Each structure stands twice: as C-alpha cells, then as structure tokens.
View 1 (cartoon, rainbow, N blue to C red):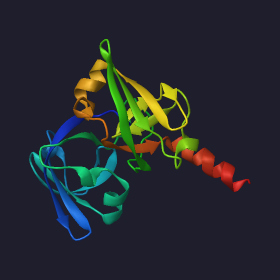
View 2 (view 1 turned 180 degrees about the vertical axis):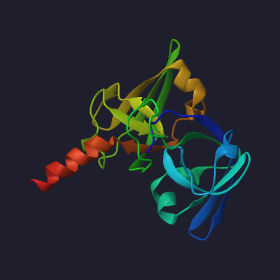
View 3 (view 1 turned 45 degrees about the vertical axis):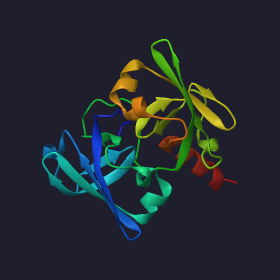
View 4 (view 1 turned 90 degrees about the horizontal axis):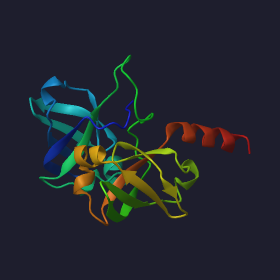
Length: 196
C-alpha cells in the first residue's frame, strides 16, 4: 500500500527485454535501504525488488505490466517517481494507492500559470465512472486532486513543490501516464454493480 506522495526520483539505467518480459534497473537514492522482495512504486506501479546493490536496484516486469502500464516506454536516462510501501503507524498523506495501474492516459496539454502548472490528461471510458470532480487519482504514482473533470479529460493544477520534486517537470505533451483510480471508488462501483 502506498500514499501517492513521491519519496524520490530515480534514474533509469536500463530496460532489458527478455522475451515478453523485461528487467528494469534504476539508480535509487535509498537503494541501500532496500532488500530483496521489498515493494516499491515506480511511476505508480508496485514492483518487487529482484536485486539490489546499494544505489542500483532491479525489478522484473511481467508481460501484463508491460501491456497495462507505461513502464515499457522507459529508456536509459529517463526519470521515474519512487515511493516505498507504507509503514504502519506513519502519518498518512495523499490517498490510498495500491500500485495497481488501471489504464494509461495521455498528456494533452501543459501550461504555466504563474508559479503553478496546469496539466490536462485524457480520460479513458474504462475509469470515467471511478473519478469525480475534486476527487483523488494517482498519476505516475502521484496523488493528485482533479481540479476540473470533463467528459474526455481531467485537469490538474500542479504546485511548485510537486512540479519540482516529481517527474512532472520532465513531462511532455503526448506522453503516456499511469493512472490508478481511487481504491474506495472501485469498491463502491463493484458493490453497486453487484446490486443490479
């Protein structure tokens, strides 16, 4: 379980394709604190540490992960958002994030507004029923509030701190972004479906 509060930004060292799977190796500032089997959200996707050597950490990516997320788009030198799994008893910011990507969305526009940035991301029909205006969604593992909700896109106002301390400062129009709808919304939707 994660909060969507990015702990650090890591750098991609390699993405080695192995048949229909792959191995992702990253430079991670807290790599020396990780052990085999630990969970780390990488751009919002919960991955398991398969090897670690101080600052270099590797993860095995399943074919489904490559199909559902944007991780397969990564190339050497790219930056990724990182968050270790929650520790019981810690202060809880953000919202409940499982690290299970629902779909990807595409950046439609990025504009500056004073010290802030406004980000528009496409909204898939697959999760449209799970999002609400002023509700939470995880974008690339970042817990964000939907400022404006339209039929086919969502608008987010990004504060300077979030812009500077996540990969959003490297974002570009057309880029695919991992989206995870709010876990509570998914449970409510499932309960409602079962009553029909």
